[in-house]
Length: 67
Ligand SMILES: [Zn+2]
Image (cartoon, rainbow, N blue to C red; front, side, top):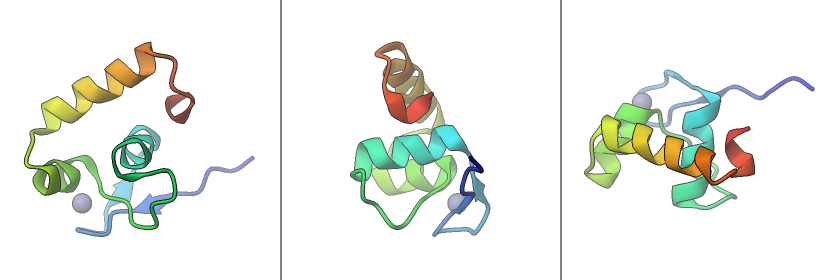
């Protein structure tokens, strides 16, 4: 099954699978706009490192959005 490639709503760059999963996790599963990590970090007033840590945390919980 081909994966849909999401584009960042903020800067137009490609949003990778983990980042897309994080968007869903933080903004709701039905989000229609995706943000890349730098733009998402900006929006949430956190750092990219914080977001990467979150992704690892969700992965370690076995979250299906990140498999
Ligand atoms: Zn962006």
